[in-house]
Image (cartoon, rainbow, N blue to C red):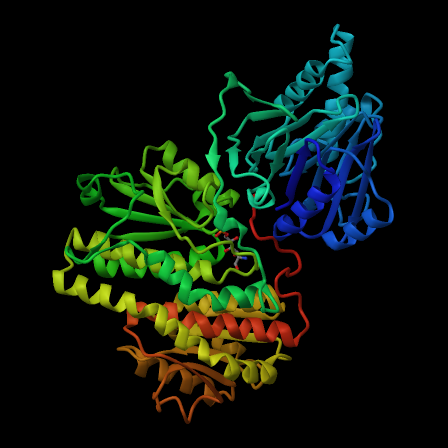
Length: 620
Ligand code: M6R
């Protein structure tokens, strides 16, 4: 949800800002802009559209200077026009800023500022911040502050931040202060990169890779005052702080597309490796269990757990549903999966020994963060299953498990899903072995898990078949995705993938639930994608398939190699390797990811940057 980048130092800021914006573009791609202090004046270039449009604009009309800020936007308030793009100018141009977040009280602030003579040029909530800083800067000078002293500007920013309700990550520069870059955070991520004679500011560490290895992640209500040779960290309530410097996660550098046409395809094909990464070093073969370095709970605490709550959004929520099946099956711990957006405002009765897991790829999803904080506030151990190292959720959780999947750039989540499912399987094994799961059962599960990377590699062989199926069905407007037990969440995930990147309406259902309503949708032009690998429930799903065929609905089956029962029923069959039921989601997710991808390609959709979406949803 919007990417921010800032620079103060000795290099040409524009080049760095543009490079940073390209790396942050996954956060939003409605518009982009930069502001650079150019010979005593702040020059702004901004444009609706992707970062390469901005790059063309800057090429035609360059700006030079060593202090600047940049922004790539996911629109919340105001249409995606040039004028609504960031950066925004305050007052008469004395202050310029970029903002990620939502200002909830912007209407009343706007009225207040209009009453004080400020003229608004945009329909955004962000512009109020720029004008408010300008208002408070004047106020400070009227109260005796020196307009040539940067302390006056800092006080104006502090006074402004106190009046904002909502979330923000801000990059701010002043015309009067050519060596000062201010960053401020409440609810939206911000990281400072420490260089030699230079400092960087960004929404995440990706723009900093290659420039510095030392970073400081800002916490809420912190403000960074940066100049080429100084870094001051201030907290709203406690004043000056000493920054805690961390080393950047260099894996974040791996954003190269290689020979792939899209990031989504690259990430789908990375899954044999990412699943292996999720398991690396996490088996204790002597004890036939899993091991984790960062749960930060002792075995006694873990044994006392009588309930697990998994909270997440979107794809991560689907992974949580698979986790529920696995935790209840192997560890016999009652498990619930809650939409984070609901949990944050609900007040469900949680037992003293409830353990809460936030599942998130980005570690920045606003709803998941809020739900986690709410549970933490009530005293529950809150842990995270997270991909992005150093993200807000990873830092605020009491402990957790990293996915180690590497950067996921495609907006449609793929490899994060299978890594989350892998980690949840390990967690079920670990908690299971503390309870009812026998030594041989633990050994068997470890053995099966170890073979998964190779099995996933084989699952990817369906690529060409999926291509043909996609050609055949790409013009259909409605799809049903049906699966049972462990494959019900996979059906939900398959439908979500198709919706997100192809803009085709798709519904996921438990296959047997279909007869309670969705079957009314079945006709010759509504294909049903059945996720029907082998297992105890297979004959039941065959019956569900018969029901669809009886109503002349086209059937696409995701079935195991050698399963002849589907041959006469399905119009098209995509084969996957046969694995135990509890491991099937890892395998059956692959053809559904590929199907959504191929259909989107055939329809000419923007696979990696689907309309209206952003990779990390940092607004409510
Ligand atoms: O980063 P998170 O895992 O917290 O993100 C949650 C959802 O926003 C995310 O899974 C979203 O649904 C994806 N676009 C799905 O492909």
